[in-house]
Length: 153
Image (cartoon, rainbow, N blue to C red):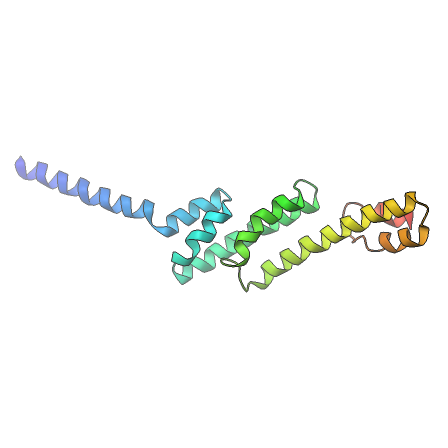
């Protein structure tokens, strides 16, 4: 009976140590951070990952970044909110990732488009039609005010 109890205690200790290791290792923590969309935590844990895990994390993060861009395009989030999520990734997790660079470029393109839309409306209201025409022409196809800008042109 003592041997059985000793064996059970050893199994519990070894299992507990294994579970403790599993739940505290960087790969597990980064998976949870990705699920929670906590990009600051992902960035902090990223350097501790093995190379094959880094590739997987980059893929998951890239998908999330695409969703962020779409949420800005669809007017569900503000520019500063999206950039606060993207910025921590630029120097670490997504550094030198061309697709991530495209997402950042897209954010800037749509931001410029919306600024042009606002300026164009100001020019139009001030009856400066040539400046309004130039600004309306800078509104990007695919952005929410594009059709209206085309009508104004």
